Length: 227
Image 1 (cartoon, rainbow, N blue to C red):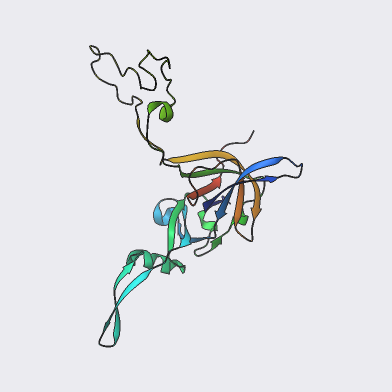
Image 2: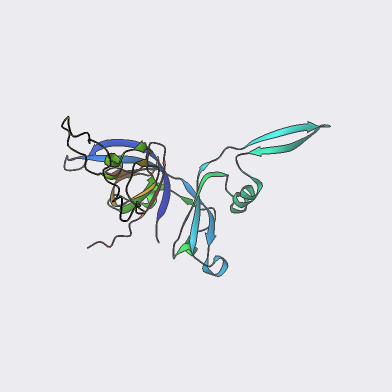
């Protein structure tokens, strides 16, 4: 059965393995997630599992009218989503994601997915939204070379030539330029699971994971074929 789970990034630390080697790890709060929908080929045209993560609080503005309480507005979750979660028999969730699995029928509606679906030594792919860096120049954003740093060069950290003036008399599409950096989806493949704490739903992954602290992280089985 293919495995996947949603998590939030807690931060980085370091541990020692059995050989006494120091290993830098990223701590992820993985789950518990619940199955909110199971999609099948016959009903939806493809096979997938939809999971929810982190309970979402809902507020209700109540108007007392002649002794009867009437709900006039709900914050956080609209009625269609409330009905969707109620059908699965779960509470309203903050994050809802879908995983395309060929064996989606093996999952049951409302089932709980915890961190113990992974074990130490597993290879995983991790996806998250990277940290935002704001507006950055071409050197930091794209790794372009700088100019001479001597006083008379007058060209230090500029971008350089964008193209000839007479021909083609324009700048080609895709030309690397300064601009907004970060806040994009980044996937790191073939990371190793160092340790799993099933009681606290923690997964320790070797190395760095994209995104800031408290970021939503998607963990899947790696798609790389091991040699």
